[in-house]
Image (cartoon, rainbow, N blue to C red):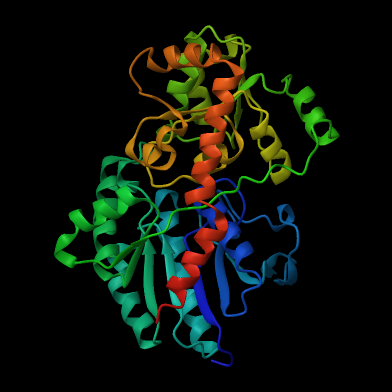
Length: 410
């Protein structure tokens, strides 16, 4: 290796800074380490397909390299080396293919550039059956293989039974071969230790992070006021949800229960909607008949998104599969009143700084009616508790510092 930097190859994020936990994580980790000369990140991203990297949505990229067709294939961002890889459209297996291609690229890059002691940090447990082979290659380089187990991929509703079985086997093998499992939730770390006790996995807990700093936008900033007007919304008069449009995030329950409630507020849904799932929800719920339910598209302007969160009456969080979810942390850091699905992961993060609901019929409806009746002082108190949870346990600076210690542990 030419320099004394520790090279970290991050594999498994589709892109940087777009919707999704890993995409947010990679963006923030590279940002908070952008001035750390001891660390050099190499980030794999998808060049095509679902969730692919669109560098035009990032500000501050440099040193872009293009292929013969004029497409950007590499660039620098937050002093990280970002490389884009094309993947064929092969259905559910595309995620496995993508991780393997990214891992091969990273190993070859280390060989070509004489990089010593690289760290390969694989996000999620998709390529377990192949990790024994690649771990041997990594160790030959003098490197190590770390994994972030994420949540329970094998429980996600979108997968068929055979694919779920694959994810469970893959998780087992990813943990068996890893040199370290970095768990983003105390509950996930406990599960990994108990479920795979036969491997005696080495683990550590590092959560995702968030911020409590307010948006740079003023209340009367045209970007915000025009967005509200275009969506027929008013400040402090809408419930909000931001996240991936997938069944296990419980959009169906949230929309159904909101429609049953007496709320006079609106329900704004910011997501990259999936037409098939949207049509299914319409068939089941007929939400288009309720003018309070508003699908408002995507928002990639980070300051605007923060302003939208700050001015929500309340925030819904329906994620039930996974560890510490970034959209939950962002909500706790920005929105005063948060209504969360009462699963262990969410309770671990928010503790008494949120209200909790279940998927039982009318449970969330009752909670929405209760929230609507809360006084401004009660809501303000919940907001102060929520911000304190982020400041004390989930600040990005704190998370970045913990990762820096892990990268330099040896």
